[in-house]
Image (cartoon, rainbow, N blue to C red; front, side, top):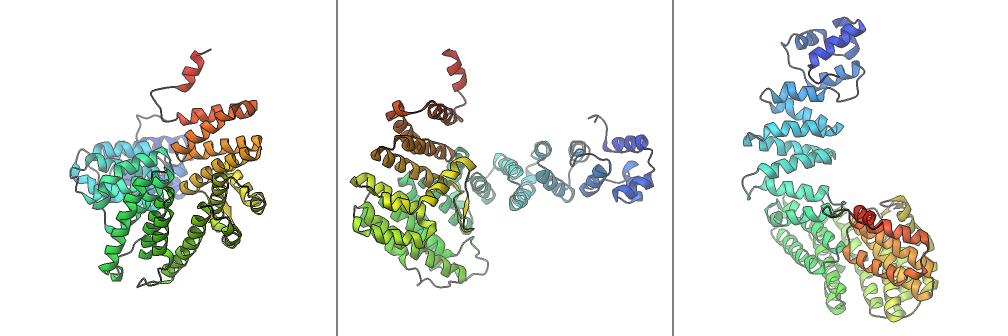
Length: 471
């Protein structure tokens, strides 16, 4: 297709080549003959829906004429959002990202267009067209002049949310979002703080987790005290009680990470029974019950991490009744066994199927679904799987199962890379080196490939070039 031709010329050439009359093509495309005539004569502008029908009737791939459409309708003439927004949304749907960039380069010459750009980005976000939405939000950020702008804060928040499952990008987006977290509408601030606590827990950066958990607790308590939950316009993504519990849960976890178990228990007690919370609906009561279960799990976990082996049978029964807690439970059991030098083989055998499911994540990618309920396909659970395999590899080495220990070490590295968990990566690489003399050629090859993945974001140094220079 000649890039110098126009849409009308392409259409006229097609009809001439196929020997079609205007009326025949109108019938084939579903575009009114009078409308087609007006378009060809230059007396009528073409709408995106009409362009799509014309493209289809000409036997061309979807969006084939969009570049021409951009040049003819939006570059050479002042765009109107009534026509522009449907086209941008269609570009987002078809991933015609260069068309979006071309339009934005013109729009941003007029800062009055930022409102329209942001509103369109929000529509793209709602539809799940995240690549296009990212381009739009980045344009808002680039052009917004006021640091106090709610629109600016929302753009950083949306980018943080879009990149939630992308490891390095997620962390970068979080750092950009943090200075704007207090400038959001409160319902979004709640979720922003939850995302920050989730992210930093995956990074094993518990000082930061505690900072944002404290902020989450204060905000949730203030909204509850001010009776915001009675306002019909107050519509957070989750019931307000969820954010209460989440803040307390992470406070408890931050103390547990430092083995300050007495302090941890005090915070567990705060979310153990939230039934006093006013304004609970069905979803709210479900959250209360969930936190009650978390509290029981974490109290038992705390006992076992302190070395109380007498609690293990009760904990095993709890895990069997609550399959969603099996991953955390196995981490607790194996961590305690490693720390206090005992073995739990008979208990691990009861969860063989679950351990095999975790191993399948290694082969099948991001995750799997268990019993149509429990999903392990988000960064947090990927991180916890990495931690499980790290502790399980140590357990296997203690038992003398060196081959299985090395397999689990490689699994830990692989999962840790997915969520950019540097602590897990470094610790597991060190573990691999300790046992290198017991490795197979296949394991060493897999390890080298994983080492290369670690360098994905080190653009100033090409590991392959360096390796080749040694030969």
